[in-house]
Every structure is written in C-alpha cells, then in structure tokens.
Figure 1 (cartoon, rainbow, N blue to C red):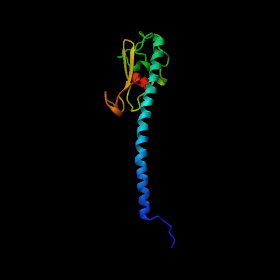
Figure 2 (cartoon, rainbow, N blue to C red):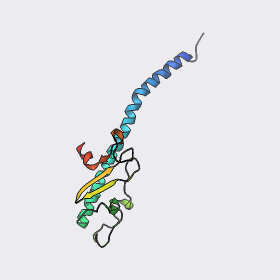
Figure 3 (cartoon, rainbow, N blue to C red):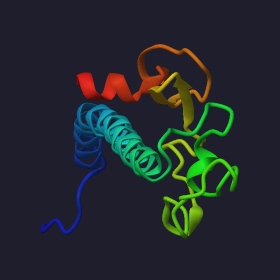
Figure 4 (cartoon, helix red, strand yellow):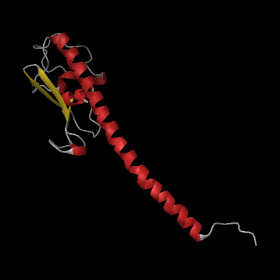
Length: 141
C-alpha cells in the first residue's frame, strides 16, 4: 500500500525539532534588537551634539539647561540669540526622540554638556537592559 501523507508521529517530531531550533535562535534575535536600539540612540545623541555645536557657532554659547533641546527647534530668545539659524537646527524643527519614543534629556553645566536617554524602562536609573544611556557613555563603547 502506498503512503501519501505524514503520520502523526512524524509531524510531532518535526514540530518538536522546529520548537527546539526556535528556542535557540529567538533569544539571539531579540537581543540584537535591543543592541540596535541602543546604537541608534547613540547616533541620535551625536546628531544632537552636532546641532548644539552649530547653535554655539551661530550664537557663541550653548542653550541653557532650562532652554533645553527645544532651543534647537525654536529660538528661545530673539534678543539673546540674534544669529539664530533660519529654519532652526533640525529639519522642520522636529527634535528626535529615543528608540522608545521618549524625549532626550539635556544638561548644560557651565558648557559641560550631557545628553541622555532613560533607556527602555523610560525611568531614571535602571539596570541591564533598562539602564540609562549617555552621550559620554556611548563614546566609551
């Protein structure tokens, strides 16, 4: 007699093998996604730093912490920043957001700048995958 189909046992063996393969491959794929998001955040922070440098070239100083990164999309003070670039420092005045959809944090302490993202947990602090990312930390990688 000629067989035209797989037996239930053969199908179960194939399903178990596929499940085992997926259990080895999926963690690696998921881990790469988080690494890619962190690399993108570092690249975005470099882009923001470059826009801040252009702001300083035009205006002689960096925006204050209080003025924040919003100073790159709209002139915070026409009297203070008379050489502000036409059209702002980002296309359409839109500031980038981190890989998790949150705003970047900007600190200016007497010209010593820091840009940071609160990471995947969107909270200050955090450990492992939820750890904060900083521009200076990205440069050390």
